[in-house]
Amino acid sequence: MAFAARGIAPLEAPRNAFLKTLKLSRAFTLLEPGPVVLVTTFDGTKNNIMTVSWTMVMDFTPRFALTTGAWNHSYAALRKFKECVIAVPTVDLLDTVVGIGTCSGSDTDKFAKFKLTPFASKLVGAPSILECLANIECKVVDILKKHDIVVLEAVHARIDATRKERRNLHAVGDGTFVVDGRKLDRRKLMASKLPPGL
Amino acid sequence: MAFAARGIAPLEAPRNAFLKTLKLSRAFTLLEPGPVVLVTTFDGTKNNIMTVSWTMVMDFTPRFALTTGAWNHSYAALRKFKECVIAVPTVDLLDTVVGIGTCSGSDTDKFAKFKLTPFASKLVGAPSILECLANIECKVVDILKKHDIVVLEAVHARIDATRKERRNLHAVGDGTFVVDGRKLDRRKLMASKLPPGL
Image 1: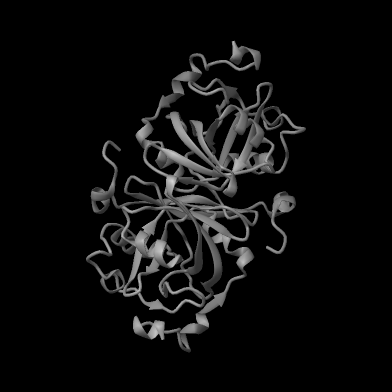
Image 2: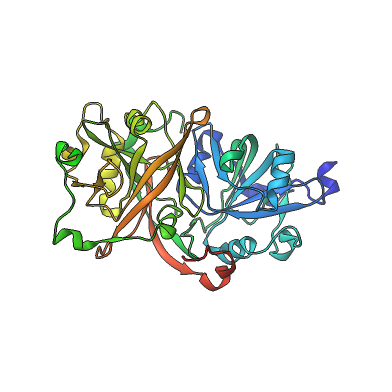
């Protein structure tokens, strides 16, 4: 009912076939490389999206930290509903990521403006974004007001298993972005340090 | 005197010519892309280094957050002396980064084992690392024990201005690493959102 009220629905076949549930024990690997992400919220009436580069993995549960505060329009919804989705964009979405980061949900429907498709998340009211590589549904477990840190716990994660473009974007913070390059494998050397069940 | 006691000294000419002081207002751009970093501490007797991927920019001052706790040998020195250096390695140091992350300062002199050159930092007792691209000297301003978050404030930053290899490494968390690829420029579009004086 809540979903219908804001005009988004669970994805139906065949589009839902692309989405695979990702084990929660692997979800931290989406954020550990430090990509710029899109964070969605729902304020009871409207969906919104913000671009965020200030995130951190806190454990393998996984918990994540996010630096945000009243200067972001999404903050009020985050505080009130204590839910969000961290959507991971790829390099083809660079101008969308920049556009979302340079306008405000106070006067803009960002899903409409940037032609993004919201779909119903499994366990939170904030929407997932179809065009992103992955969507991590999160509950707010703490807000550290003194430092403007929001502590999140992931409760569900889905990834587009068929997508060809999988390269993250990393914001430098000066208006430039670095795209993922080569991948190097040190799994054997690091075996003793990797969490079980990865 | 303290420096002499632990056998490291300020860099002398000609090696110090490579190092340029980086404006503190730009130091956040070293961590915002989410690189894996090396964090040094000094415990009153010995220097140590840990590999850390769980960091976050908190503001442009800049302040940084770091997730760490008693499970890291460096944590005791961080708590006691409230200082560290965040050194930013590049892709040529991958095996050093992995090696440092898979042994402990409790029984290993990591500077000696990995043939790294410590040199005296300007404003903190923890050493800087000559082989890294940049060294950000930090003071601990808060420790959020409930969440194992250490809040740092950068007080000085130096960068190797002549180094050819400048590509960061991004830990995925499963034993693989992504190397920086292409850089994309959206400075004009983002001008309204960039901090002044950058």
